[in-house]
Length: 122
Image (cartoon, rainbow, N blue to C red; front, side, top):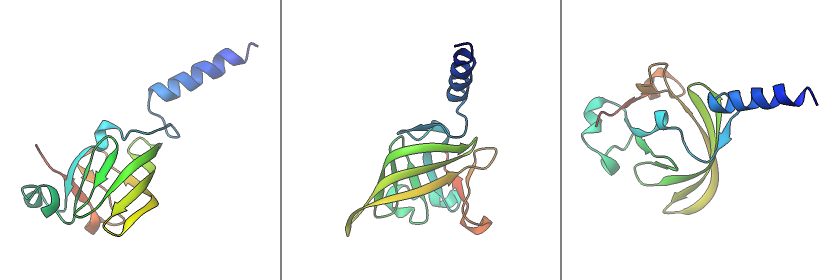
């Protein structure tokens, strides 16, 4: 019985701090917003921002399609993995992905520097 309290406290502390491994169905606020290849592309907004996307609490909207996020798991302080339903003109299918932010939160990191996106300013 004396081991249960430290375990409960450690679990509560990890959940409160947004530690890696925490799961839910909402994308955290620091990942949300519009992301584009360049700041100039941000003025195109919405569908015209063909290289970027918009992240909300439960969706990721691309140029012509979107994902409805089902589950989110933090994998680090600035990264998460998600499962979703990918919806396009061709239909729907299960999907999964990763979102990674730069340390300052100003860039969405791609597989290499050339695929990084910048955060659009409102």
